Amino acid sequence: MKRMTAFALSMFAALLLAAPAQAKTPKIVDYALYTDIVATIDGHPIRSYNIAGYTAVVAEDLRDYGFWVIWDGAARTLSITRAMRNGELETPETWPDYQPEPLTHRIGERAKPVYETDIVTYAAGDFAEAFNINGETLVFVDSLSPFGSVVWHPEERVISLTLGDPVEIALTPYIENLVQWQQLAGAGSYYETYECKTGTLLVTRYTGTPHGGSTNMLFARKNGGVLSINELLPAYVWGAGYYLAPDGIEIDEPGDRLSFTTPVLEMPDWPESGDVRSLGVCKCVVDLRNGTLLSLEPLSEGLNWQVSLAPDSDSLGETLCVAVERSGSEILGAENVYPNENMMVTMGSSGIAVVHFAAMLTGAGFEKTAYYGAFQALGALGLPDAASSGENVANTAEQRAAAARYVTVTLNGRPVSGNLWWSRGNNHRDLNFTFDEPILLRDGDILQLSVGT
Image (cartoon, rainbow, N blue to C red; front, side):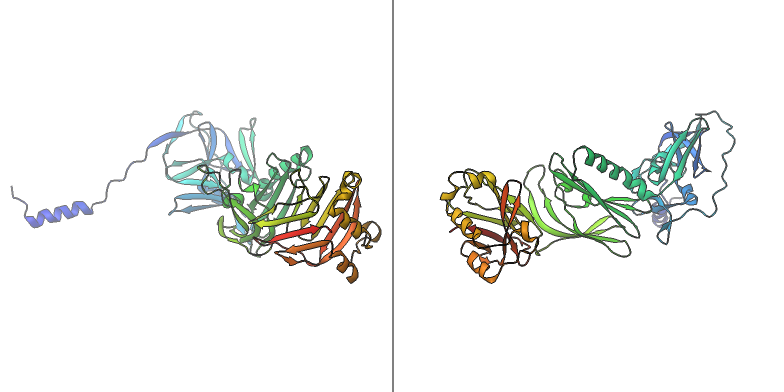
């Protein structure tokens, strides 16, 4: 026998290295079974198998039944949505003429092996359990329910999918739940919808819940995909819905981008720490097609706001001195002084209301306070009374000058101008101060009201 030369050995080694590795045989994890059940889409039969007692159809076949079935090789995902043309749902001009072959095997007999797979399948954006049969993907008919009504007809041995409007299918349960809650406990609950070329945004606001209220934003695409806007926002222990208060909602003309402003809180160290960080009011921009948060930008501009402040036994004094400060997205009351417990102060973007309840006006000791002197003096100035003058509450220059001796409103120490007027309610009389220009507090701003002689 001849020995191999060094050159021949090196060539042999090179050939071994260049030879393709033998493909690994995928593992069989189950078997698809023969079945007499027929699956249909809008009355048209489609190939189907029985897997684990449920009817599954071939995902790739759905392309001929009004669906897009999109394969992403890089991500190894298969996505099923309704087919669209010019922004509208599309149904086949010609349906497949597939007819189930006569059953020549016993029902329940093994038809084809099911192999393991690392491909992740989505139907309408939600995970759908899927199976690999000879390189084809099978999904359960029930996974297609976001696209229509799935009904089992036992007498005919047919499971049918009747295609519907994916937007209506996705949003109706949320609207019905809110209406039901509105009737049971949350009278102030409401919902709003915003339609665009690619779908509909649903905003639901629940009141009367254990944590005070919650808001949810959900975008349903016309092709069946559903996107939770809440899940894109910074994490919060009870969910973003408990700080979400969307304002200025806009969707661009193509229906690709959603923008809105909202206060934003986050708990970056949860659950190790319960610390809450406020990002203030932020402008959020969402890519509706890709389901991503494009930007979250804290704003320095003012915040529309309103807050009611009530006294306690430790805050009583001779005069009224009430201040609020904006900190992030919150309006906080400072250390305030009240002449009586039977009153309340409401401050907001448009003005201030000092509510005097009947117990205060008739209670002993009120007339001895410095506030009482100011109250009497203001009553003698002939200020407008909403009960008789309606919305005409403008002050004369003389009234403003005289009232300034008793009432001072400042923003960061600078005087704020406005009209003083009276209003009345059930067992209370209110002193109102309406700003000449709305005050949209910025972070760190302090607004203060002082009344006394």
